[in-house]
Length: 109
Length: 112
Image (cartoon, each protein chain N blue to C red):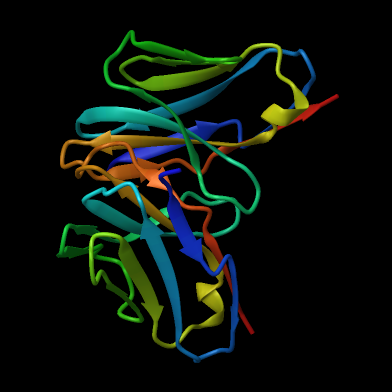
């Protein structure tokens, strides 16, 4: 069965304390992996798409990487405004999308 | 700005009273999706339209229906809302099936 698992469920960081969020997947065929940011009470905001192992994308303090089994979202020197839930979604062979439950990130000043 | 718009942002209904949520898009995308998201859970796909072709997920309850009268608009009808239907309802669009999905701000549904 196709599964997407995000860890940790929640992460609390001090401002400036770098860390990584994990998205691991077991799917029949990966066509793409998407990262979204979701603020409380709002819709997910698109961040990155990764298509093949070894690919990396960067945006401001965020960097997403992809291997054959998982993706990492690295956050460098986070600020309080980076606090949000980060969702990972995997697109499989039939173009269906499977979402993870997200990692809730809190960055304290 | 091109975007996905959902109305209303907050909807309160009574148990069993039909409710309609709306979504519009100015992106001119072919595909529109409806998701249900409960607290701390992953978004769950209910339906999607590729142009006018309607696709129902196998486990979407019959209580949920959808209409897409034109490219820009899509509606989610909940015929007899139950307490378990209280959730955030997200509309998304993509240029084609399998492309990056862009989400609206969501409608928070409360069932009393």
